[in-house]
Length: 107
Image 1 (cartoon, helix red, strand yellow):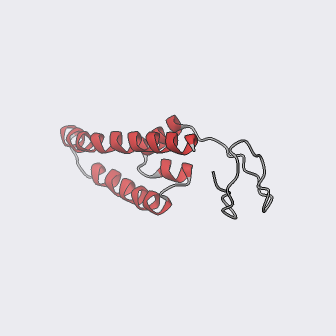
Image 2 (cartoon, rainbow, N blue to C red):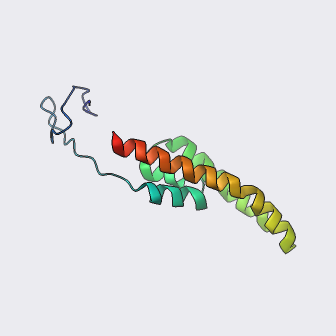
């Protein structure tokens, strides 16, 4: 494991870097929270974990535009079809956010 500030190799059980003194204890994020955030607003889960921030912002914009696009359809059948097509994308982002958060938490 390396120090996030100076890059010196440190032991996993160390609480502080012996070189620069930074705290090495990290707060674990919830994979379920990341998945839920990514499911409802694409990219928001990535901002929550601090990974893929640029993509997260772009996906949030796309998510908002997609939601606005769905609102222009007048019939209930059209809306169900529109959102039904987006459901696999919602699930994919939720799954990806969940897996990435698990990897981050494992170190």
